[in-house]
Length: 190
Length: 323
Image (cartoon, rainbow over all chains, first blue to last red; front, side, top):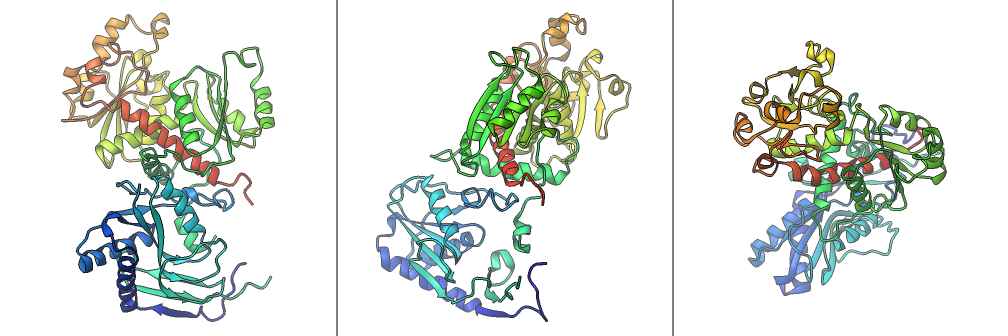
């Protein structure tokens, strides 16, 4: 049952290691251009790849702008809108946000923007920590197919995909290499 | 579920939490890991997350309890569940309603989770078999108090790190203690060794005779039991035991089996002391120990809420009908 595969699944590399590095660096510059005043800036990554990208963005800001901004990590599992429908309990990881988000300009960071439901959950989680002055969204890949009225402020790469495709982000800190690949899945014929 | 999602899912398939005696180490670890995330929620400015929104948790307490009931209530509310309480006094339970009648009522009320405490061992199993709701045992007779065992394990791990090879002393009325049994069933799978101590009249007969579970020993001499131990748990002494002729006097119990400052110093430096509460200070534990630097009693209370949140989350994430 499920997906049928004939002779392996076709995969395409969307971003190589250099592309990922450039995208992060460019987003860091765009964040600075957008807000100028970096004193209120904070970066919050969504587990489990967004937190790694958030760390890199903070490092880029430190190198380019000589500022160290507060860094946080959010786990959005408890805020998912499908918890009682999926039929299993996903692992809940600890969030780590040890600064007040009140009056901060928070840049939320995630690896892939798809339906928008993860971001919706992250917004709900974030406001439980206080009232930011503004929340912006940075993503490495925007693959389309939004189900909610959500858009990103900073995008590494826009990629047209089919809803059935898989976009897989690999990052050195977690996966041992930097690469974004698209894995096409055959449509299941019922 | 995709392969990726499967990898992200916890090793959790249980519908009820009745006893931890048949749990795998993985299942215990799943609860402890999830509890860590819940502790963080309780530190936020808004101490509430939404996973149990629209769910009803019924607290059915047929035996008096304030601490455990309040702990479950806070846990359920922190996860946005609706909570309602049925307690023994002043309810139909007191008027002689049978447990089966109560189950029918609970069913009709449509609770998603029933948290129950009952004076009869096994009562939660009876309810679990006849109910659509997930059942959490909040203490049944002398049998089990699984959430206490899990919160004790979580608290000890916070203080000692990995429990592999650590030796924990449990002292007191083991015979009548569901806490002692649940502590054993939770701490042993995590690698701990248990030394039981207490009056021989308050030990299960087989255990007193040396037929003990794996990794558990009995040492009648409390001083010897405590020597070089990594931690100690004092059990509450029910005062009625004395009337039952199992104890000569509370004063003698306190002299021979009480955790005093001099005694806890026999353990390793900084070895922690725990108590499930409520404490009889001056009987099973001295006030100076109960509120001293080694005491984890308050942390047990805080962690109790987080561990119960973890269990509620895990149960609601598990489908009621297996397809």
